[in-house]
Length: 377
Image (tube, rainbow, N blue to C red; front, top):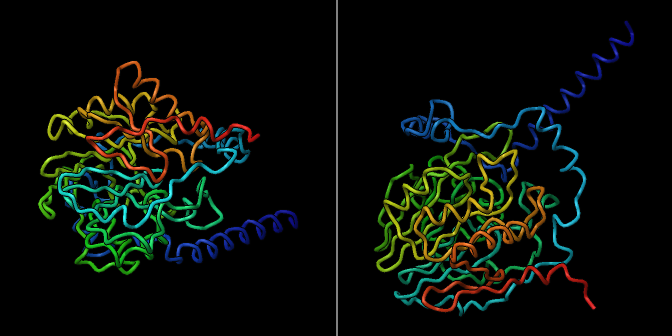
């Protein structure tokens, strides 16, 4: 009986510790704030909301059973060779003056690593998923950048006409970045519910527009469209799918751009291509995949197929090259998507972090990643 009593006391102690720890952690601002009250009731009017949470078309969700999680746990706990580069990836340093042009003819996308892009279109500046912080997680010691140097410091960025977010995961929506740049931003366009996080972090509600799938909004002469994606959301154990996830179509006077965010491969790409294509530039995710979660992250070959479905002219593979969030070699995503594109004769942009893709000019195509792991002599 004494042994059973001790076991019971130990179990209760662990539960109490977990409750206290969870209460402390969830109270930290970087976790954001899920929609509540009237805001939440409004979200339930969306066709994507089932009355409790948002869901993908057909109710598709990642199948991560306990058995699968246990099987993968050793792989995540033990670092594998090649999952991160042996030295920092190159970052091209830029001057603030590089982004001061307001040329209405220009279509330029400057890569800030992973899925973050400063897009210049119609003389306006849009920042897509500006994750510029040191780590893809709620705490700075978690998944760190492969190079913590930015192409240009946040304080040196020009005024940003608008920021577009695809969803609320840490490698896309970053608390320190919002604090540092929110005064530079004219407006935020986000999927349904995500505005709760921004307001919790001090962004005025009048600077936030939430959109459902297929909703369009006019912004300074261009059209922004929230288009479907197949993914999920959440920043803590208690808010899974409390906010929507989306991809974006950006329609300028002369150019059309597609931004993927995160998504598995699904029929939505073809629908988007038929409705809004062809696109001058498609930014489509190609990294952080695994067969165990293929529903919500594409394989690189599917990245190329999505690009074809979208009727794209230039493919920019994103969601790779800056964070180790999966189990594959860090260069596998770009190598595999390049192989698929080469067979089809597709144009693929491979800029270094900090380089710009400018439509109408030579597209960056140097395989720079091949030199990163070479032994220095």
